[in-house]
Image (cartoon, rainbow, N blue to C red):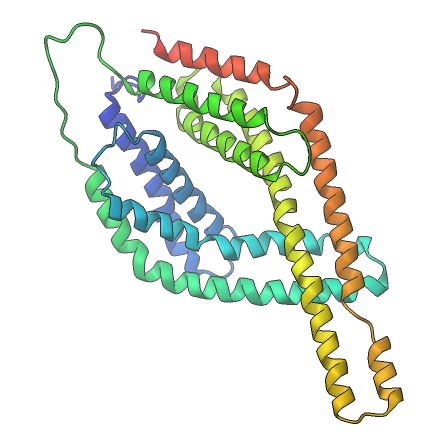
Length: 331
């Protein structure tokens, strides 16, 4: 019977994990060519994120397996998938706001959706060409480097040999300390940086545990709770990111209207034409209404996080993860 993944040598186990994440990205890659496949980019990004998280977590075990230049290419490729997806997330939330706006405010919503739609289309068009030209070669090189390794084994070494389980237990404790440390600095809805770092730490913990959960009794519920925390912090991050986007949109809309009025004045248009132009429905009120709704979303999300996770409320989860690490250290 084949050993469990956790019982395998760390040099082998980490590479098998990394290759499984590369397989996920490679399986999603051909689907990107299908415009009707709305989940293709999401699945491709998740595969790349999991791969990069694995390479980061097990970097000491994988030392030398992924050359620095290759890791840099992978990072740039993953970053290239971000702008289009970010615009898509903002579009989804803004569309859900239409029924909460008065008729006079919907002009601003339509205007902003148009801007984001153009940005998303341009980003996806650029991404398709970028990925098509670069991912196949990158995948081939990564697979080549991760599929083979050399290890030095001392037969007379004292004590039990390391396994993927014992190595992962140590990494699990490090990442748990990282998440707990960031949590202690999240006190209000405006603590954007620490909340964002907490989200990343929760995601890394989840990515570390999730592929091994089937072998760890008690792990699936912990993974589920980490996913809930990650989702909440992710929505909070979306609200933080959208606020300056809306502020910039208000400035752009106001500048466009001012330029239009200025052009009418220089064109010697009648006063009545200029007055009609000044009274014309503008985008700024709708954008400001959306900004208020987004701020309310931010505050409500933080209130939920504060009620369920902060001020020691996450300690039970942290203790359970620590117990899981202790079990992985056992025989």
